[in-house]
Image (cartoon, rainbow, N blue to C red):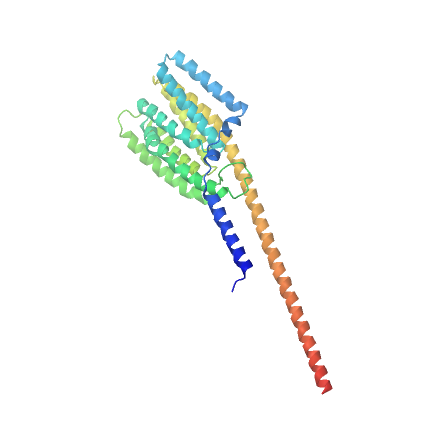
Length: 320
């Protein structure tokens, strides 16, 4: 039978576990969509926005672009830039800007005859924002009870060497398949470059959704390649090409910043994991030592008691 005190302690333990589970399962919308990423803007980020804005205004004047088209292209550029800024900070706003940017960019690709990127943006990038948000929220709930050493809402990680043996052949096969499909489409321009960018964009978005640092290496290649694609398109009388060229030059510069930020987060988390592992190992060793000492103490007591019993028996026998 349990005593009243044991029953009370058991109820308190259950209540505490229930409370911890409820706290773990709560999603703080205010925390997820905090505007702190705007407050933390660095001087070079404001400078990049200013340069991109001025460049696009100059281009729209020189090319005599329709005001509506110019504004539309600028909103795509701004959303895209804020997307990479939020990605570098692991901010959940990435999925808001990431939903608008591929839809707008897909429309530009449609009018420019870049059908590979159009299909990728409409059929893959936009839906992946919903998938990405759900996966990041799951990781956010896990990290709530962990030391937040890197001040991010989610954990980032690195690919293992054996992962490349799986990824690279798949990318190669997909490139050949996409290139072949694009060559069958009427009006398709630069299919070899479009296929390369489209396949790497899919890979980069997947790695970003799964929180791998290597997504920035992929996007760096994508942004350089896209700069070349739109640079070539500028000489083919494409109205939107100059705006997209400026955008991808900006992306390229910021990809380097994002890469260094995520590498720093991954390093801090690795140090924290090692620290926790060492702490757990130390605690385990301490417990083992305590158990060993307790067993020795009990053994000594047992031997002492045995000796005392023998002495008493000898005395009794001696008296008899």
